[in-house]
Length: 114
Image 1 (cartoon, helix red, strand yellow):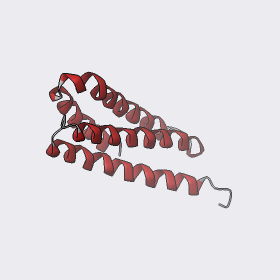
Image 2 (tube, helix red, strand yellow):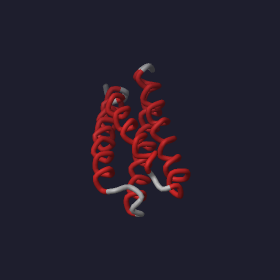
Image 3 (cartoon, rainbow, N blue to C red):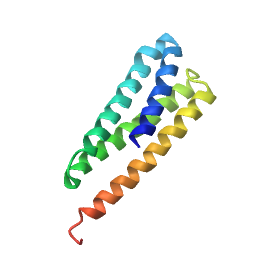
Image 4 (spheres, one colour):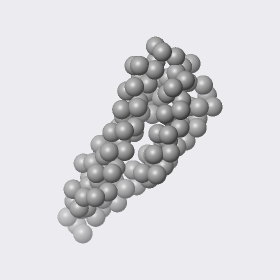
């Protein structure tokens, strides 16, 4: 999952440089920060005890979801073309599915019924 998010970020990094200045320094920089914060949250969760991972995985989910929304806004304002938007969205959606699965697994493992 971290490898996939890193790949999405590297792709984003290329696209960020091509954004119009009006978007590059506002939404573009915010998306860049969200990617980095998502990577940080996943990296942190990977090294914690199972019971301590849930808040970090949830944080990564929130950051990833916000990234998706802001990318959609870039696309809707025609600051990011369809091909680039689709390429990024596919990678981020896959990471989102994996984060959701990880979260569900952690909740089951930490439930008192176990």
